[in-house]
Structures are given as C-alpha cells and as structure tokens.
Image (cartoon, helix red, strand yellow):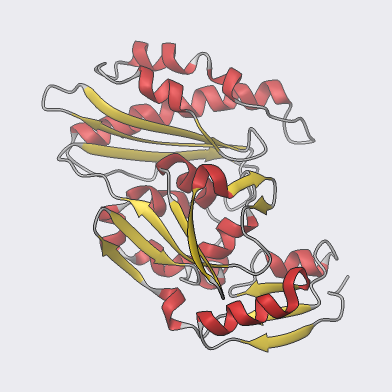
Length: 297
C-alpha cells in the first residue's frame, strides 16, 4: 500500500511549526526522520492530512549540558546521539539503548523525539526515558509546558502531547557520583527488531559497594514502559549481591501487564523480564564497581 494523499509544509522555526499545528490541529503530523511515521502512513494506519517538516529547525537539533540535565533536541538524529561521547558520559543509558535500535540506516534518519512521541511500549528510548525520569518540553503558540515521563506515556502509541503541541526537547537527568553504572539488554527475534522484552538499570554504589540509589525499567511487558520503583528501592542499602538481586526481581510480574502474541505468551514475557532485570542489575553493579558509567549490556 501507499500513503493516502496529504499536503506538505516545511517549518523553519519552532514558532512556525506550532502555528501550523494550531491551524491544522489533529489533521497534522510533524515529520523529521519519518522512520516510524512513514511506515504507518504506508500501511494506512496513520492518515494525516498535513505533514509539517521540521528537519531544518536548528533549535531542535541541539545537544548540551544544562545544570543537572542533558538536553537533546527532538529532531536530533539518533546516530548523532550514539556517536556523542560527551552525551554518553553524562547519560550512558541513552547510548546503551540506541545500540539496540533498528539498524545503521534507521538511526541515520530516525530522531530522538520521533521515537519518543511514537511511544511504542517495546521501543528503547521510551524505556530509557521512563526509567530515568526524563522530562519533555512541549511547545505551542501560547507557550510551553514540561511533562514528566510518567505523565507523557499514556498508552501504546499515545502520549500527553496535544494536537497543537510540538515536542521541542528532552531533559535527561545526569547522575553525579564516582561509582555509577548502567546497562541495557533485550531479547528480540533479530537484532534491530522491536524487543519482545527489554530491561535497563542504573545504580550508584558507595566506597563500600553498598547501593545508594538505583532505577530499573522494563519494556515490552505492559502498555507503556514500566519503571519498577519498588524493586529499585528494595536494593538500596544492599551490596547488590546476586542473592539480593534475585530476591528483588522475583516479584517483578506484579508490576507488569504483558500480553500474549505469536512471539511470546504473557507468562514467558514475565519470565524474560525477571531474567533480563537481574542481568542488567548485575552488569550495572559491575560497571559501577569499576568506576565506569556502563556498557551495552
């Protein structure tokens, strides 16, 4: 199939993009990389009357440190983020998650914001954003507002973005500390496919190896990515021993709501979540103990 007929406009500023969104409302879609939107249009799952191209807006391609946050513009290419050493040192989970995203060609065109507003519950960047508690800056002609990840992701392919709002930037918390480690892992049919289940974690340990804070997230096992805060809190004060990790993740199923499909049953997804959660916590522990920020898994 091919996309339904649509009109095209190119915005040269965020203000112009917001003005066009205000004019055309729910009949309009923003496009930058098109790696998520174009296939949906080709299958007639999305039928926007207007496409508003934001590729030429330099403001949406920024990447910078701002206080306690690392800020990425919504139209920043995923490949550019993956190659950015400074970003990887500040928020290693972004690069670790991007390793699993699609293929080289996908990341050369795909954008950070495009993946996030698509809100696929099995996608990597939404999982990282939910786990770390990222914040989303949404702009419209009347001003802007900031929405937390827990508010932003509402359902599969559905976010808190209003029809006249443009995602301008994402603010990723930067952890401060000497012994911080993170890890991301997933299981998919083939590398680059959407995950059947994905998991990521970030931990900080003190000089004695005790966990002083931790976050843990699971993707592909609920309608939105899940930050498993109760399990992460239960690990604080422990040495992150294998036994402590295994005991903590044993109950992970009660925080998830997976479905069954041709790839996996709900029960198998819970099993995968348990296995992957333990794996990323162990790897994050090892990375923190080594004084490094993290590795791919």
